[in-house]
Image (cartoon, rainbow, N blue to C red; front, side, top):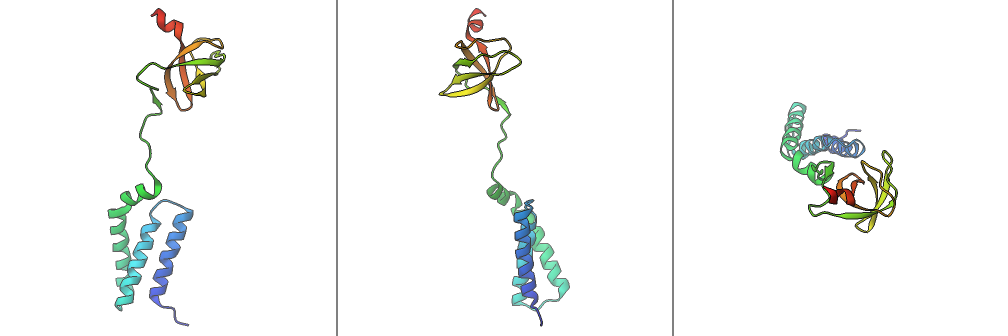
Length: 151
């Protein structure tokens, strides 16, 4: 039984694509493209094995260098480059303490229609109105509103 080299290159390309799904590093994808390029050239022309390997290597490297960044942003999504800690708003925002905040333990604050874990530098009683100072991940840092007025 004689297996066509075109079929071998084509199946090698499929194997690269499948392995890329299992172990995403977005490099094997381009080896699959190189294998398919070698299969396409071999389907049109009868070329020796060294030429096939050369076509495979050149097309894999060219596609990797030219398209990896663009295709990676499409398939992998874009990452957020924002810092972890940002100010909530430029305008002052307030909330109401629903569970007392006793440092170093967190309490809960109702703010913006939701309940947030909240941290403060000083103890704040339940029911107190607080000023939202900063937001980090899912925890907001607050300060008692009366302390803000005294400054």
